[in-house]
Length: 170
Length: 187
Image (cartoon, rainbow over all chains, first blue to last red; front, side, top):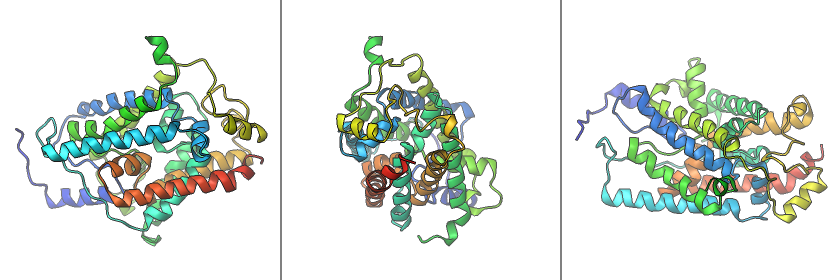
């Protein structure tokens, strides 16, 4: 089993900043060469294929979903949540560790008003663009070049949020 | 076999594979699933500009950028080697509604009437690409996650703030689709 060092105060501060307004955080304190990250690219590759083949990146499917005229997207998201929930339950019950022996940690999210205002704003944008952030990458990859503009606008939106974060209600 | 893969995949196959992302990321590296943060890491990597929200070691989250890079590449494979030549099969009521609004080209996953370069400098382009994209980027970060982070990872780990966020995503989408989009589509 690998040795786990206690994180230093600067590491902890860095982790706290990364955890701000974020669901997905690297909780590992291990340092690996860059190519270890290819594990994530490999899964991303499968993920991207699923996105296209199940037409999750289609603007049409998002319209159907919000118009309640097709079960497809509800089925996809519902199944994903069920599988995810069962997995997390099993991981917690068995106190499973990562393949490098680290204890698995799932940080808890605290409620703030951003989940309401930001959530609403994202929902409005989702119905227009037909894309959440993941599908944006996939739409560009699938050859819809114009989505590069949507993507850059999304980066600009995130940047603007970072600039004005302290002035917004939370 | 290849013919089967080329057909549109059913929801339960896609849902199961997407759900398995949660344990995969936890087990191979103690990472919690989420995609919208990649946009933030790009900001932190390219132009941190002394903004405290972007002042962190983005390299520690580089895994997320490798992940989204994989998504783009996978989508390319899905749209080329595994491409389905048939048009998108839409629910009849959706198809009728969109046709009424002049959206009839379902030969690709995105309607060419909206998502094409020729619309870039039009009002339509400004709304569907620039404004829409901006709301996705700003909103997801303000909410602290997107469909993957909140709706899938957050709900999977039973976090009620994620349920609030997910409900708000749906409320926003429904308001846009039923009240605003009908006007935007005729612009």
